[in-house]
Length: 65
Image 1: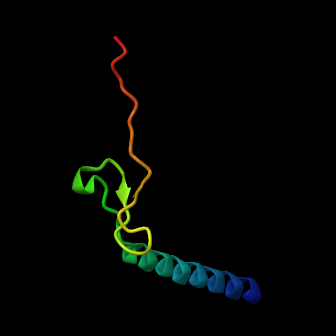
Image 2: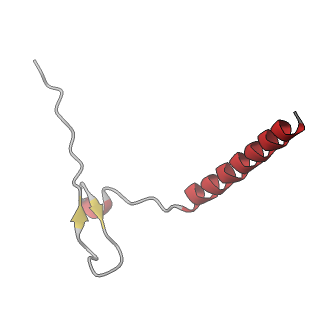
């Protein structure tokens, strides 16, 4: 019985530390600027592809009259 309890406590503790690590990584992510400089896509700011626009954002029209 004691081994099962120890195992459960270890797994819960490991899960908690993994959750904290994942949350810290999520907070460090930098959001990509959309609609920058009048474009409807994501513009790369650094690196060899600087200035290129990726993945234009489009929406399907809802004028179905």
